[in-house]
Image 1: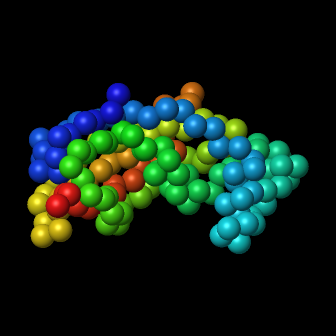
Image 2 (image 1 turned 90 degrees about the vertical axis):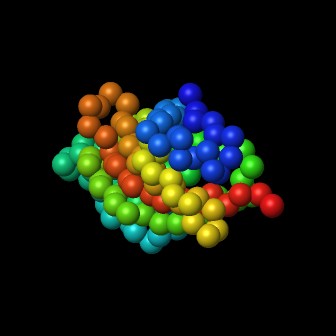
Length: 152
């Protein structure tokens, strides 16, 4: 279920609200594409044979790949009517808590933790936990800030 707000000003009333996204699988093709895009070709990400005898028993997604999927994982979880645009304002804290093994499924749980007016709109603090299917411990927790710019 998503968080729906009638205007950027209404975001202050959404503080404390949470929403959970759908499961999403991270396959080897995506890991390879990320390695190629970032030129991070460590064997723990790409060499299935060597990884099978390594600490994770299979290849793992890059931590930054999991982080970079936040827009995909959180899409539709927070809908704010009357918004001209939403701008990524930055990150306050990120923790990679456990590796995402190839073919694992992840999903986002997002909480609105703050909403403050600014000259351009509303700065909104979000805490997103990326859960791993079948695990009690999340893959990562990120505290992000987004700027919601009202229409007109």
